[in-house]
Image (cartoon, rainbow, N blue to C red; front, side):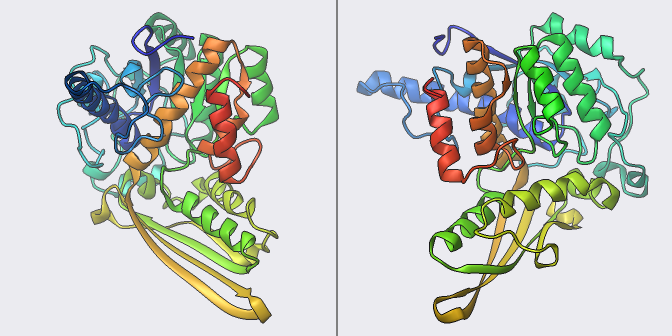
Length: 385
């Protein structure tokens, strides 16, 4: 087993949006925090274990720390990002997430022009330039270009951060990962890991894949699932529920085109249905984005309601409002998914990583209650599953 510092985890990113910005900021942020913490440990006789650092589910995951992650390749289609160093591109418009680590050093990695395909919805032209994508005039990359960049960079894991509804683009990058020999993390609601045909291709190539559709660290889906599971365990029958979300980032703007929402709604709805004691009829469950509110920027506001009956068929209801910064919330999970992929590569394990997928993703190939998925993932990290 490699230990932290002996080996880097080389990642490539397809889509330098808000989520990628938070991830790259986080790698540097926790490198600094860890460096400061190590200094304190040396002075006071402490150790570099899994001690508390705010925001991490695992400081040490199988011998790897966040600081071991290195971006070696990146692709985008926005002219304000293509051709720039990753450290600059992550702060370029239309990105609007919180800047919690402004001093990200130059990576020496230039953002390459990717493939557009269905990655840019036609309705975006009706909105201000600072809120939407501006297509680069650079020549689009071919599949061969992408594969060559992945190979020459030494990328081990490719992260898919395509916009919601980018079915063709997501599958394009998954195909590139297969050809280049990279593990793949599908953070978006396009069904790849949960598609048996795609899963089989990664298994045949002995390449790990985690997917589909990242859960936030403490977001609408995980809270909704936890409450639904609590109702079940406490003998309360859920009769109706909704989850309404508003936000002001490009993800919410993109989802105003309702034709791009099919996979997203399926993913989020199934994440909740799968933990209910009894599946609800379609008319009794609504889970999905509600509206785009520009001034919210990357802040996401979720309104949850569950209606049910408890002892004696007496009715009750629960309402909750959750406000989170959307992109750092997902980065806190992706940073663990990356390290789980690296562990699988070290161990020669290919195909779908079922335990991490169940814990980290909304629409994994196999759904499990979150407490069980957590235990399964801990066993995977320990090499026992």
